[in-house]
Length: 324
Image (tube, rainbow, N blue to C red; front, side, top):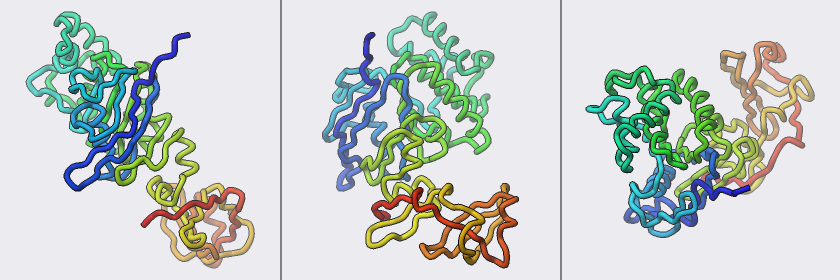
């Protein structure tokens, strides 16, 4: 059995723009056929990492390997990666087929062969019937698929996606997330996905790396990172509602499944807000204000503006409070 080298291996990557240290000592690996989501708030450096991997920026230090080849000093066209930007960057004067065939053509593939490859990839993204249209004749979702097809047509073993769904409305984003996950599984390329959207990361990626102020502060299997944040800052970024004080520099992370409703002491309900599923309420607990999501049936547990609940201490984790 032949072991393939990682689709991407990044070691100690750093980049400063003047006095601003945009990326600091970032190390990542993307296996062949794996999707890694690089997530973090705006300005944390994640798009700079992608541009460094693509060769659009040169690192101050560190190493970039693609499929086992050191490409740190190579220009973008010599790195053999597929790129998808958030604005899609389609050529308005070319047809859909021409856009998708562009990558292979730039790599020296003869026009008939490049167009044949483009038609294969358009079928993969279910756009073969739109091959003769121009980008302005497509919907946002269709343009996104063309941009992805153009990256796939290069045959690259590594795809780099920078906020690929950010320009689409929420309903279309939800639909495309499922399509993209299936597509990534079929093409077998390694994928580095940059996104600020936690749901997008969890639905598309097998692993995630969380960035803060230019550094990767936690990485691992997506489900593990979301279920077990390593610090209060990571938990807050990932959308944890119940991060409560636990002493100087420490915080308690209270997951939803630690809240045992209808048991124990009644605690005062200080705020209520209706949701599609029921209500979200704030409960004055001795540890602090707890956010509790109630189903329509569970709302009946509120009596005289109190809600009885216990917190299972075995499911509560204590971590460093690094939110400042």
